[in-house]
Length: 73
Image (cartoon, rainbow, N blue to C red; front, side):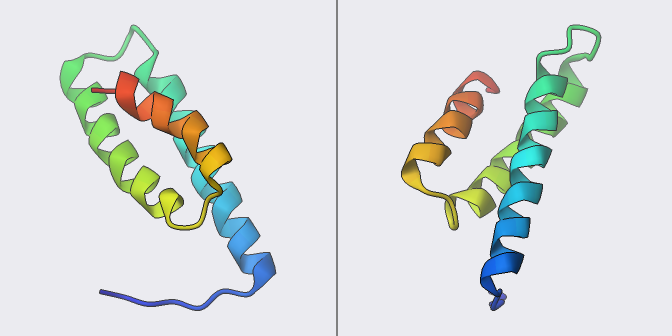
C-alpha cells in the first residue's frame, strides 16, 4: 500500500483529474464504434479509477459515477 499526503489544493486537483478521466471513459464506453474487447479494457480501468475517486469524493458526487459503473458491465 502506498500513502500520500495532499494539500487541499492538490486534493481538489486530483478530484478534478479523476472526474474528467471517468467522464471521458463513460463517453468512450457509449461509443458504438468501439468493439467488445476495447470497451472491456475501458471498463476495467474505469473501475480502478472509480475506487480511487471513492476514497476522496462526497457520497452525493460519487453516486453520479456509480451509475456509470453499473452500466459499464
